[in-house]
Amino acid sequence: GAVVSQHPSWVICKSGTSVKIECRSLDFQATTMFWYRQFPKQSLMLMATSNEGSKATYEQGVEKDKFLINHASLTLSTLTVTSAHPEDSSFYICSASDRVNTEAFFGQGTRLTVV
Amino acid sequence: SQQGEEDPQALSIQEGENATMNCSYKTSINNLQWYRQNSGRGLVHLILIRSNEREKHSGRLRVTLDTSKKSSSLLITASRAADTASYFCATADSWGKLQFGAGTQVVVTP
Image (cartoon, rainbow over all chains, first blue to last red; front, top):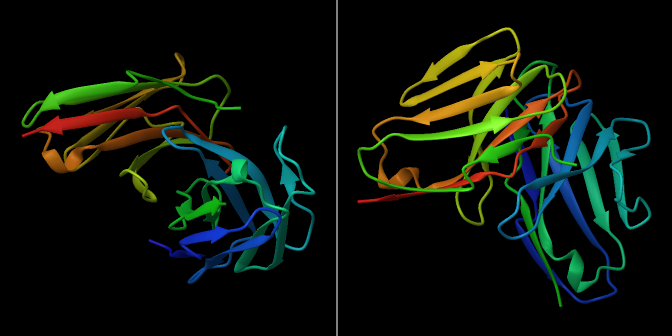
């Protein structure tokens, strides 16, 4: 299957700082990538849809100014958590599809801890 | 918001037994996928079943899909301790966007 690489796998940051998470499709072009968040013992919640060359589409309740998404190329999407707070501590995971009606390929996830 | 509801929320079985979990959803779908997640780790894709398919097999896994009832089931046969994990169903729309169910936590004891 296709490979999606997410970096970093874990990060600890101080309150008020910003953290950038990268999601790369290594062997295919992904016009669309998705960002999810998962709190402990809960399911994955879709945060936003990242479209190459255009603005991301955010799910209801997700602050677009806090979670900045950039999809500058067909192989890279980034999620920046701005002015992070302890309640932003979570597992963030991206996925990418190379075409419709096929499985989504997930990155390894990033565990963010804000102290 | 989450698309799928899963039951049971938790399942505890012994090695060799079968494990069955169900998933229901609300809107029309392009396909439905099942994933596995070990504690604190990433997702592992198990199987994808398209909306025009009714049943699919992969090794010890069997998935059914009933679009008229908007439900799916995952059966793991002859379970092993290594099958201990959380299992999620996810429905995909025509753009590939996934909505996940709440998940079923499966514990297989030796």
